[in-house]
Image 1 (tube, one colour):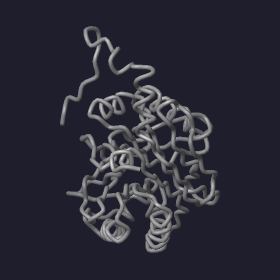
Image 2 (image 1 turned 180 degrees about the vertical axis):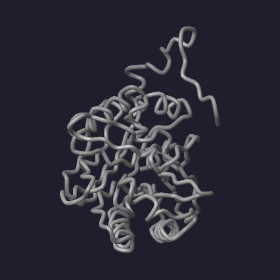
Image 3 (image 1 turned 135 degrees about the horizontal axis):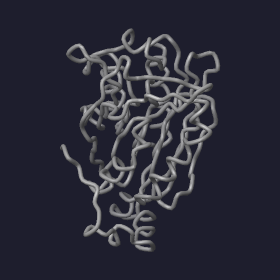
Image 4 (image 1 turned 30 degrees about the vertical axis):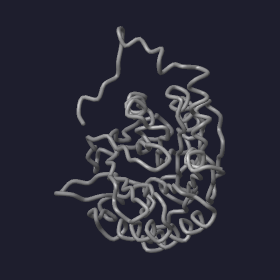
Length: 282
């Protein structure tokens, strides 16, 4: 295989981590699984939303850190050690008296490439099932998050961000071929919408979509759905975890993405004379 052909394929690993109340245990177990993924040939590795802390408004202030800080130092070191691109799930971040739900991304040399603060806060009320208000403690981010790899450009969102089709469209317009959403859907929205939203964003934009969830903990105050997944530009589910802690692997084929776009050329068929989705702030 020549170098050009090799660059059209890479292995993506999603770490579905069991998150305990002990931050150090979460960090140690995450690093162990990251090393395992790298040994299996993964070049891009993603952790779940809120991987170092239980998910919940009462936990965010207690576990919050500045960035750079303890958790991101660990991620930087292990990304460099393993020579990978590491999408660091998310952690509660404290900055200037405000709290954010933030994903830091690191390159193979350990450099932090970006930090994505969750743009759309998870404020929902499904009577009799779930009521959750991230805005009770968190502030929203206000920037897009895209980074380059030797394989493709990657766009990052966090969980509830996936429900907003415009964000994915803007990332696709920016040249992203892979969208990664660390997320923690729950036992109500998970079975209803988790896979549907991933397939929708992938199909709408003819991109790969990956989601990394915490493993399910039935004893937690917030029970994650699990089922970390990768969906192809055709809308097929290429890999899907169950509810338990695991690492899933998917070989991403960018030539296949090109083929799909040639077969159904929606990117050239959009009616820009009638409508458009534009970024108002860069």
